[in-house]
Image 1 (spheres, rainbow, N blue to C red):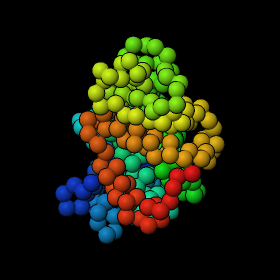
Image 2 (cartoon, helix red, strand yellow; image 1 turned 30 degrees about the vertical axis):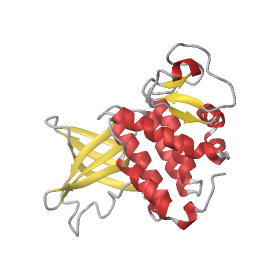
Image 3 (cartoon, rainbow, N blue to C red; image 1 turned 90 degrees about the vertical axis):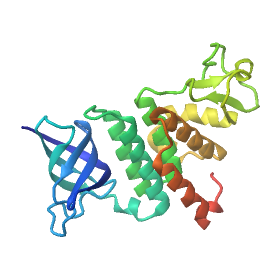
Image 4 (tube, rainbow, N blue to C red; image 1 turned 90 degrees about the horizontal axis):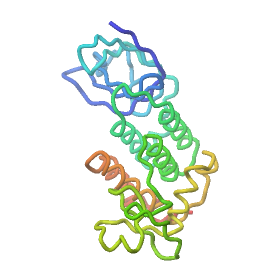
Length: 262
């Protein structure tokens, strides 16, 4: 029976039987790990609330090699990120990031870049950076780290240089990038973005993290968030569950509803 130990973030969980819980972690050493935490739902469980969504901890597990699920032995909290869970907007955007990691990665496929991005994003949200902006920066970079970068320099259909005019830019998520005016006619279901949004997408890929999360994106922030939702939905075959929650929070929150992105 193999022993595994790694720093990890809780990215999901659900009940199993009367007292157990199946927990999904994203770990630095092993990537996504799914395991059974025995008696985790009992009042006097040794996990004692440690398995809350987004908690960073030291994971210790046993792998018998007979199942995709490991046996979670210990999860010692390193940082709870409780301030992220205390606010609906912060929680919604952070939960979306966690769901993206969980659904876009395979079991036991380590990705240090994605792990680092997730931790950085959670720390930024906890530190007061605008949650949606952090989610946009995270999404752009995580999708690129996983090999799904959208092409913006040339038309993905004919290869001609990307348009540089002032009108909306057509982007075909299914095809993987921008589409020129000539190919746009024959391409259904394109997403139209303002040129400033496409320029912001390019900048966010290369800016320093602190600079990117502090950048004033204006309308581009909302357009890029919608683009990321559409791209992730295409990659996983359906919309994320958390996207609906985020939209509802933005719809009903008087603060968010009356605030324009800057």
